[in-house]
Image (cartoon, rainbow, N blue to C red; front, side):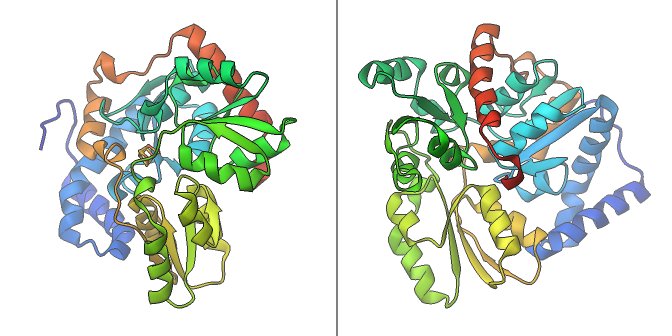
Amino acid sequence: MKTVAFSPSPTKTQLEQEIDRLYQKFKSLNWTKEQCELIAPLTWKINRKKEELNAVILAHSYQMPQIIFGIADYVGDSYGLSRQAMDTQAETIVFCGVEFMAETAKILNPEKRVLIPSLEAGCSLAEGITPEDIRELREKYPNTPVACYVNTSAAVKAECDVCVTSANAVEIIKNWDSDRFIFVPDKHMMSNLGPLTGKEIVGWNAECIVHNQFTKEQVQQLRLDNEGIIILAHTECDPSVVLEADFVGSTGGMIKYVKSSHAEKFALITECGLAERLKVEISGKEIFGSCVLCPYMKKINLENTLQVLNSPQPEHEINVPPDIANRAKAALDKMFEMTTEGDK
Ligand code: SF4
């Protein structure tokens, strides 16, 4: 384990209290007290450092349980995290997610210092399209509005009319006064949005390396093996997978569905972390997750989070050039303007 400077250690009593706090959360994931003992000194130090710095930790639902339940102040999907980033009163935002999320936080709340613990926390979708690609699409499809998925760089957002997340893409595209839409960069989501919005959707061919792995055969087998199971799929899955599902939407939408449903068994066709989260938060329901991990999300850990709080290096601080930030913010503002908050 990396040695991190500048952190006082907890007293014996403080450590015992921290181990107990963690164990209450993690026992539903079959963690032992010994496993909690291993991470307790780190979670204690991070939580203390956060208070000292007036920092807030925002974490995506695909993060590891030790991040979600050990140190995060808010856990959510891209839409919820954007709202939290915009509204926080903290001086520093530590983003336990991937880079485009931290960039979005900086654009929405430029006065704050935004830190990301790992420089390797990218995203195959965000890396799959450039601003030049958007300009070419605009030439090819003149007078067609462009929606970019939030999983894009700030420079790509700056070229688009509106930004969308999996929580609001259907609502925004449906309500926009145009029969044809350009949606980038996810090829599966592009195909899924056609039937979901009733509009012609053209776009790009990038893919999420996690959701691209699920197949309709896996989903069919799950149903055969588990009578009465409800299957929820993320909008980034292949359309053949989506067709097999009982619900399609964002991770936030999936959580809401499971919490409010009277069914007892659920399968979450998305990154493995969401099922772990729900196993802790929901009792009395059987949750089947996938074992597909996002390698980018998992670059964030307790060690590099403490490191970035204790001694942030300039490269860990997110900055967006003002011209790009202003234009990207216009696309994000349009998203908030067109989203019905009560449903999110
Ligand atoms: S799960 Fe997919 S879309 Fe999300 S960060 Fe990982 S690669 Fe990107």
